[in-house]
Length: 185
Image (cartoon, rainbow, N blue to C red; front, side, top):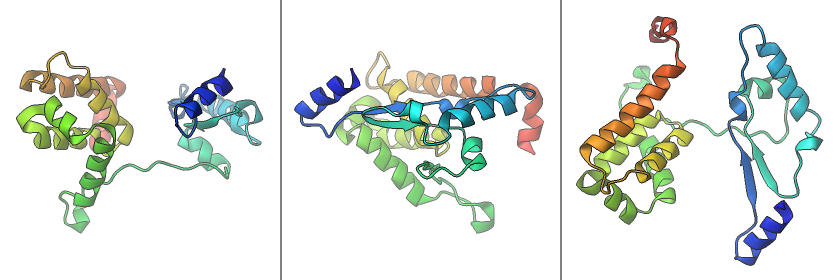
């Protein structure tokens, strides 16, 4: 099926098919099972991962801990986008990072469509999405995707704020309350 799908993509003038197996980097267990989960993933990806080879281009996301356990020849890390300078460097906005994030946005949604989606507040709203992403490309794309799913276009101020609050709520649910003090420290 993958070979047939790739053939259809090539017939349409595309370079081919790429499959991304995403979120494998989020493999985790409990404090007592984490080692077993990591060893299981290590076995899966070890020795060239023959059982994971497909007849098309494939990208797998893997736990960073796995990459540090063994030296993989073909593992690349997608870095976070630096949005702010370190306080020892004067703090503040890192403009090159914002520019890179904006380029990422414009590669996904053309400027004209962004203006239609966000209305008169386009620049301010996109910058706020970039800020909320924390420099995490996947989160920035997710925020754009959620924006595009809005029932009203351009997004009203309340819909836009609701979107950001919902994302914030999702992150708050990921962190147990007893970890807040530790994270703040």
